[in-house]
Amino acid sequence: DTFNPSDDPGSLSCAAGHQLCGKNDCSAMFIDSLLENVTASLPPKCCMCRCEIPAAKFERLLNPEQHMTYLNCLAMQQLEPGEAIVSCTKCSYFEVRTDKPPVFFCANCSESHCCVCKASLPIAYEDADDFEEAQDEIVAHFACADMAGAKAMIDAALEQGKEMQCPGCGLSGRKDGACTHMTCPRCD
Image (cartoon, rainbow, N blue to C red; front, side):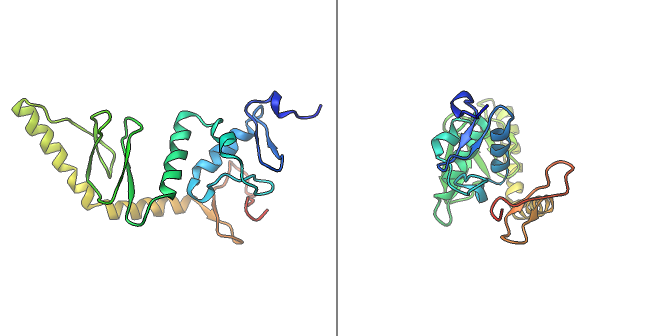
């Protein structure tokens, strides 16, 4: 039997014709791997020849959560220095901001959350007691903004500890399962 990509709607192919099948989850594992380190992996490239994979072919295989991650990373690549994307934790709304607000209020779904710890925050109600409680909780999250730099350093150190850099090109990767052998998609 020869492989026919039209028989496998989950398959992924590059412009050179290399195929990752969908039946054995090869394309799904490729997508998961790419989205783990998406900033270093965009645009998606074939793991065999490094040829770009057409965006339309790649995007049709993404689930809604993966698609949102992919679109956010594409948007982040277009940002000017000093700009950042601030997004809602409840819906797909996001804004490009030049300031660093400690609290984000979504214009789409009216939810609010702390921009540092991502905790949902209460909406201030008209009732005086509820309003004061909500306001106190929101103000308490301004301390998160004061600790944002330290949190970013800790998160980066934890993330760096999980990864191993390729000695040839410096691309970060992670060990897959119990296998001790690692290969680099850039250098191979």
